[in-house]
Length: 273
Length: 265
Ligand SMILES: NC(=O)c1ccc[n+]([C@@H]2O[C@H](COP(=O)([O-])OP(=O)(O)OC[C@H]3O[C@@H](n4cnc5c(N)ncnc54)[C@H](O)[C@@H]3O)[C@@H](O)[C@H]2O)c1
Ligand SMILES: NC(=O)c1ccc[n+]([C@@H]2O[C@H](COP(=O)([O-])OP(=O)(O)OC[C@H]3O[C@@H](n4cnc5c(N)ncnc54)[C@H](O)[C@@H]3O)[C@@H](O)[C@H]2O)c1
Image (cartoon, rainbow over all chains, first blue to last red; front, side):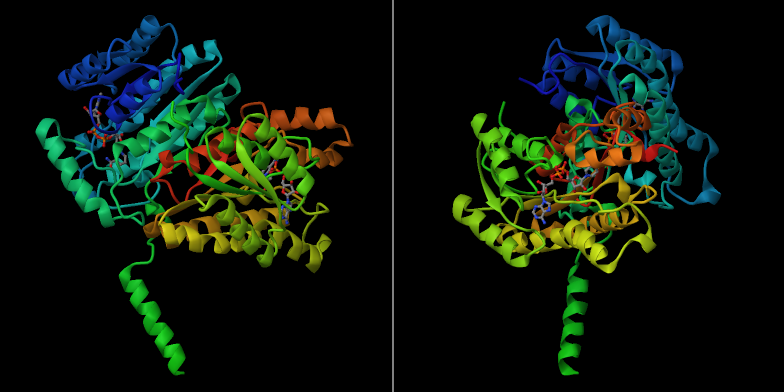
């Protein structure tokens, strides 16, 4: 018995990374899944591997007609839609405010803010009619803490997290829950494809080890499990929440060697006095 | 499907229910842990209440035993840890559910020192004591999950409840601080903030509604953005997720199980 038996989900950005890990987990838990992404060959290969309960729908999530079509495809194919995971997204630009490229800024905002808005806009009527549904949007710890690198991305993610809460207030009384999941440092090939993506993920897996209190990199599965909880009926009273999966990163630094050293110096001084 | 807490040992502090026969957050959590394969030590000041939980779990074929302890007392908590290690050999999960509301609703001027001490000790200091009693054995094994039951009152103040709010804000901060201190030792610490729940603990709120229980339930349902209160099972399922290995990258988090109450203007 799976925890998503009988449910149908749409997962955007499902061709690789966090999205793909979630597709695999949802299928393993008994869901039927429509995978939406721009990367068609990866997405189709994934669905072929996972069987007839998993279908690919090539979609640019920033284009309204395509998002409307995506939701229709899911409802036509499976007769219902229990979960929409708005997860697709692109990286922001480095460099400060003075060097911001305006077109790129708009693209980053659209890939996160606009896409999440469009997904919710077009799934809401179906979920309202059903009287149930769970919408999950991918935020980021960048949307919670201010970092000057990737400021366009951070601002877009803050918009995602807040829009999530606003829509949660509107749809809650129809039995629809709207939450976000905010990953920390996850080892994916974000922004790259194919072998480059694999290589980036492997590098990050090493690099990320010391970037948060839990001494290992976050993995796509870590976020997928959070999405599973939010998609399942186990979270039927969780609404408007941003679930952070970051190994403790936003909480601050844990005891580092340096702190340990200064604590022991402090202790020695106290004993001398 | 593999049980999600197979082979794990959980201590649930406050595993009984107010009114003994009802179903509160702690009781439901203990039952869910047992269903998922954990061996559960049911700790409560009120042994009769813990025994009721034991009966429920045993009827379903689960493994558990009841134990009387006052979590405000260090000696009781040390005995609790000893007993758990003796019975089950390890401790994987500490679930701190004990919490009480002030005896009277009111502000600073309606509260004496004894009441301040009582509420802060039961709601906050107890979690410090149970944690410090359990941590050495978790540290020895390099793994463990601690879950503290807070409340939306930690972040959203209600008139007349200041002392409860202060104690629960302390629980949130204790949670985050402990998470940082032990993250590199394999121990995770998280909390849950239940919102408006339909549990026996809140029966006494009918005072606010002229003693009319149905009116209280109706108005509490309306105040929640999902137009209903939550159930003890909602807290239990959230707890299961946070203490299980599925959440092994989640620490220092305070999860609201409130139907959206905290977002509401
Ligand atoms: N990797 C991390 O550390 C991290 C941290 C926080 C948040 N996130 C967020 O998690 C989500 C997934 O990221 P990931 O790390 O798996 O990256 P990824 O690049 O591996 O996956 C993102 C997917 O989205 C797709 N996509 C991008 N734009 C699209 C569009 N317009 N239409 C359809 N599909 C599109 C890509 O093709 C790709 O398959 C993103 O929203 C990202 O911002 C990632
Ligand atoms: N029910 C709600 O609406 C709600 C809302 C927000 C937060 N909470 C929190 O949830 C927790 C309790 O939920 P519940 O439904 O299980 O409550 P409950 O009152 O039904 O059960 C709590 C149990 O703790 C025991 N206990 C009290 N003091 C103790 C002590 N000193 N030592 C050992 N055991 C002691 C009681 O005997 C009781 O059996 C509390 O932390 C409470 O603040 C509840």
